[in-house]
Length: 96
Image 1 (cartoon, rainbow, N blue to C red):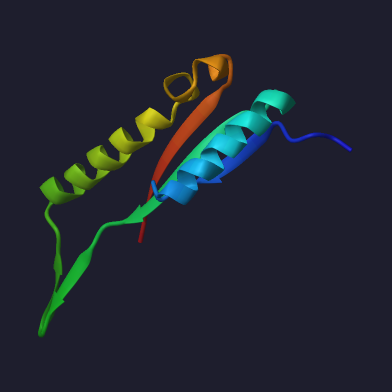
Image 2 (tube, rainbow, N blue to C red):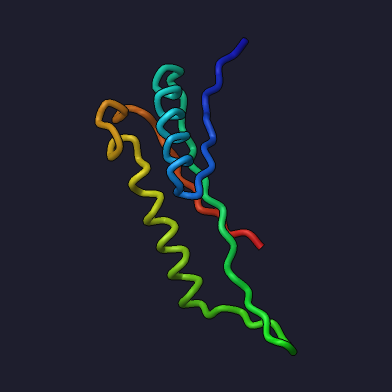
């Protein structure tokens, strides 16, 4: 049986997600696998009685910047210097 070379860790930045990421990092270290951290988010859409209201580009940019910034502390070297040799990818995906 082939061992996984990539481990996907979805996150909502909660304590449980952080624990799952810690576990994935330990597992990836043993398997010599890459960790891919994924956060999917949706831009809010507000509605008023006669028409939907779409948020401005500035609000979207603020959400995207905050999401990408929140992903950065998840790097293995920042979390644990012993994991400095692990490869980690970070993905922030905007849904519809």
